[in-house]
Length: 156
Image: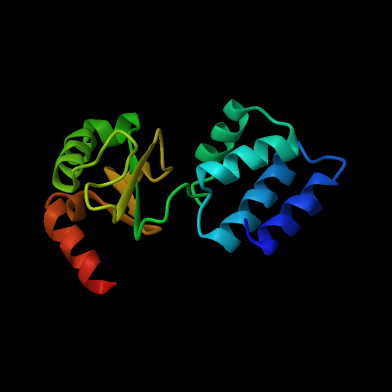
């Protein structure tokens, strides 16, 4: 591992509250800034350094969408909450999975997209909802998911 990564682990390893949620998240953010994502190797080192469980680390990573385990070009977070589900949210999600060839790990077949789901995006009034690259897309914008994705890829 790089000298910068080793310095980050050395610093956090000396902290009294190294296993606190705040400290682990700070460590993950610094590592991501240095590496671009949290690789499986980094996860092992985080567990060793902070003395937390694998289960706790995975929960933290899920709780903080800004922490990424892969270097995808585009991040999609789809709402699976009750209101979005009642307004074709699940159908849109199925179409999205099919269109991108999303595998079990949430990564598209071409590796350019990462799909995650959240129980609620707290945007119920505009349901169904989805964040694509941290921008909210809602309702009618999601009806033609293929065109939307093509437009997003052209913009970047």
